[in-house]
Image 1 (cartoon, rainbow, N blue to C red):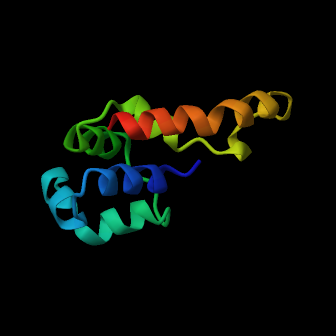
Image 2 (cartoon, rainbow, N blue to C red; image 1 turned 180 degrees about the horizontal axis):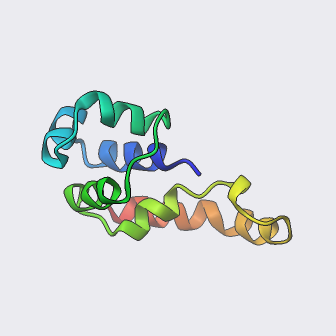
Length: 94
């Protein structure tokens, strides 16, 4: 799971800085940086607040964070065939 990268991608797509997002979420810039680099995993409430501040459904953040390693072996072929297209649609809709 690459939760930090999905948050960072959405933030950048919306042209928002770390400072602005961190302040609106009530966390430090350092904490947001650690989340975006996957150095730390945020609490559920923080993820929900990030989705709210980024103005995207929580499901977008969670879907974008799924990696091939998260998928059972027998479902990887389907995942790999759909993943890129679905992620592209989500990012374009932001």
